[in-house]
Length: 290
Image (cartoon, rainbow, N blue to C red; front, side, top):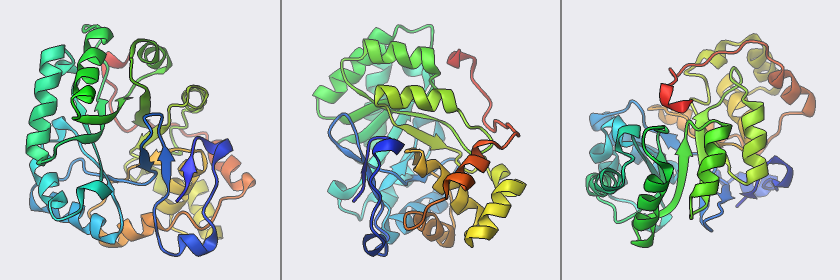
């Protein structure tokens, strides 16, 4: 499997290995391996959510992303139930209003109960909260980690300044920054900072909630490579060392999303996507980010 520490250090699978459709992994500072491709579960709920998780795991996915605010932990847990826990990588997140010490610990323990898990592979601060000291928040995360309930921790929607503060304050390594990132929102400066600090970026909405799929540049490159626009978007991201968690309920799209590791975009094609002038953010920013 692939162990990546950023685009410059990435060693891609050989064509023989990728035919098995195994998903490569990223070696985190915590020592654990995080699959580069996962299944996002917002806004899936009910039986549809459980079936999507089960389908993905049957197909060869192991990385499932959820959050307390999604309200689907129980359904995700049901989808995980029949699979070997040791082979899963489960991420959840705690909301900004629950970053105080006691609230964070209570939220994490409730999330584990709902998911029917003993530990989370990754636990993220969903949004920052400037009204709660980071020392208190990261102290609670350290307590949960030392108690065996978390393996790795990270943040989400952190701009450079807040991420720098988090790295300085946390006793545990910050293992990812999950942000909106797609061809119509190329956050190059943030990506470069994360690489310099050894914090991999995880891209949510990696297709811009389908907005990027209709871009002329993406469409032209997809036609040239005989790939889908979604595959071009995802390939562009992973070539930059970015972890991706596209959401889909379609088994066919899940399979297509796995088929991005046995080919590469040329430097010219990648540059064309880098230079797309359109900029579109599809997730409304929280004031807590600033």
